[in-house]
Image (cartoon, rainbow, N blue to C red; front, side, top):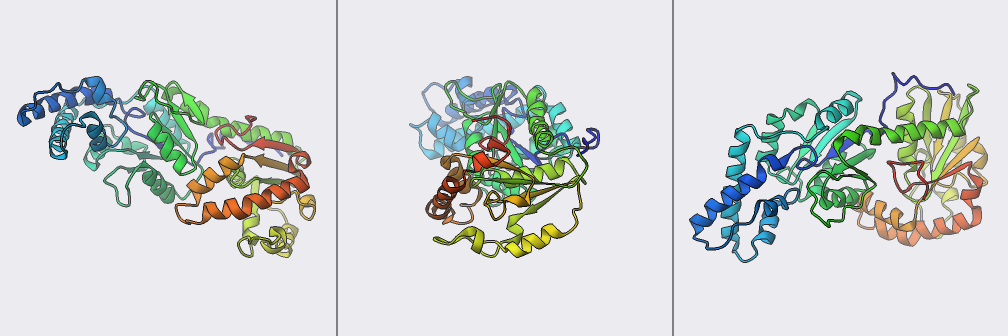
Length: 403
């Protein structure tokens, strides 16, 4: 298979990147802590409160979360009406500061957004802010140059950041996406949708805040290099598995439940346009798997699959993607096999984030039917020994990383 021309191929495997805003794209510390303390001081005087006003550091600790909940944690002894009045004054002061032109980007943001946008990656924002604040920053910073869609707490169908991400994925019509943020809440929202998360250390996470993520960066300057790593790894995989003879070659991609095999196959097609086609076993599905039934016999129309493979190949590399490709009845359909492994805990977490929001029984079905059958099948067929390459599918950002 001939090497792709790097000037003609996308640099990034991911179709979409979703960003938190404050502390990720925007330098909120330029205006929020001063404005919040100023607004709160005014509100304390109006309410006749004889208590110390929270410090600027305490106000900064609220950035990235839902503000009314943050104020409740910061001022637990006040009633709801008083807290609402204080927050209203803080927001008034914040918009006054923004009107002075205080909004600005964090280092590396503008160049990163421009690079991703120019490479055809779809960009979105998910922020725990109001619609007014979002509109203000979108306008002040001209974020519309790069950002295609943005969601906030005032957006339709939104209760929290996980809902924002779900809506953005639906609008972009992809699951080939990554979330970028600086707080644990960003990570939690990404994982609730089964997306990998990139944590920015130079954001506004508090000391001791646990933001375990698929990748960590010191600043946005390293984002393009990190995201480009998947494309480089996938190119390496093809070089290892596919001979450069120019003859039609069929590569099988299979793996454990929710291991990322479909996204991997589709990303290979995107990264090598015109050179790779993908045939998914899903396209010959008969009906959902049932307990006690051999999925290979009952779930797929194998005659239809063989007819499809008998047709002339449209590209030098043909990928066959789906579970059970290493079964003796299917194994010889491919000249080489790649198998993705993930622990059961990751399979269930991804099913929860990918399917359970739409199907309440998805996790139960995976636990009681799919995973037990997969365990028995793996014990009988030892896919890790049969495949030419076995990878850990735990981190889509680093497909060649072992373990």
